[in-house]
Amino acid sequence: MKDMTILYPYHGNLYVNLTNRCPCRCTFCLRQGRDEMDGSGSLWLEREPSAAEVIAEFAKFDMTAFGELVFCGFGEPTERLDTLLEVAQYVKAHFALPVRVNTNGLGDLINGKSTAPLYEGKVDTVSISLNTPDADEYLRLTRSRFGQSSFPALLRFAGEVKKYVKNVVLTTVSTTITPEQEERCRAICAELGVSYRIRPYED
Image (cartoon, rainbow, N blue to C red):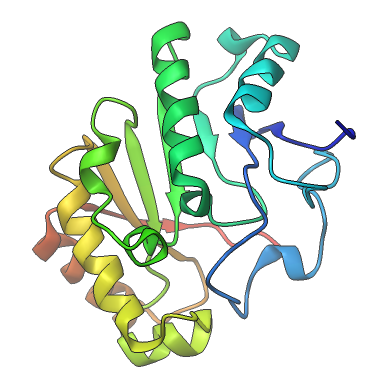
């Protein structure tokens, strides 16, 4: 196997780079202007790693040094949902490490089925990029290949996955929307019964 960045430390956590595929072409996507994250090495994959290859990479790290294992790289991790879940199950069985999935929330559309129940017992936190409270603006920003069905699917997944995962968070990026829009996002989260987080912008 060619040397490629499958795991990389970032902000005290260990990140898993499963794929470069994504159904969105977000106008603000970090990978448009960089190929790594704080010295990670290039996150553009030669090919997608198997679950066994990901698991083998854990031996290169002191797993007790990290706060979380996070599925988040240069792609949407639910494009590799089966691999994600297999690796997450391994981590829960072998390391005392919480597991988080950073996602655009479109995994049901990607996989053509309801995916929320599959997270039970394997994932501790699901962080979903809400980006905006408005469906039309969401589509303009994300340019999702699923079109108008994207925003409702995201909200539906958030409401469903909270039944199986203890911590579900919808996020927006600081300075990218107005305070009024942030309040509308907060109201959406309150209605869904999930948390809201305004995350810092990273250039």
